[in-house]
Structure formats: C-alpha cells, structure tokens
Length: 104
Image (cartoon, rainbow, N blue to C red; front, top):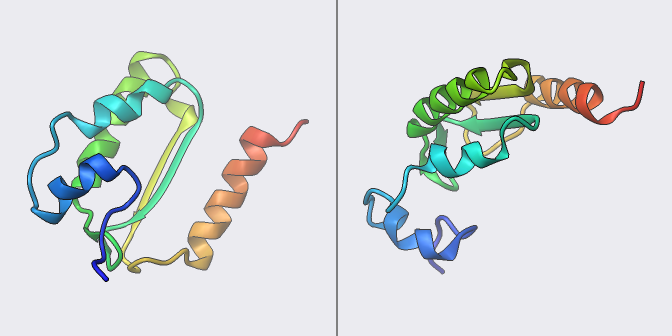
C-alpha cells in the first residue's frame, strides 16, 4: 500500500512527486478568514512528510487575518513530535475550542 497525502486526491501526485501545487495553498486556505482558524501541525510528520512549508503558509495566513482586522481569530502552532497530538497541543486546542465554541 502506498502511503502519503490522501485528503485532496487531485493534489496527491504533486506531493508524492515533490512538485509545486498549481496554486498557492495559503490563498485557498485564506478563504476561511476572518472566521476562527486553528492549525496544529508537525514540522516532520511521518504521515505527510516534511511540513516545513506550513510555517510560511501560517505567516501568510496571519497577514490576511491582520488585513481583515481579525488577527486574534488566527491560531497556528507547529511542533516537532511527528504525527501526534501531544498533551500541550491538546491543551491549546481545548482552550481555543472553549474560546470560539462555548457560549458565555
């Protein structure tokens, strides 16, 4: 069985062949702005390969949120623990979910 990116099948070949995607990922991802966004990713995810490019994506997305005057709605955290959801990342996620999903 071949492993690798499976979430958007049309993009799979680009990632498997380490080619540049036909669009800038941050531009598509920014379509969610200014709604709340939380991303938690690993730099070296064994399931997806090297994810270092995501740091730049996060920086570009933050600029979009600032432009839309919603920088506090943007949360982006990268860690070095492979394809995992370590306790400190879970705590961050729970606090974020409380902030944006719980009714006060």
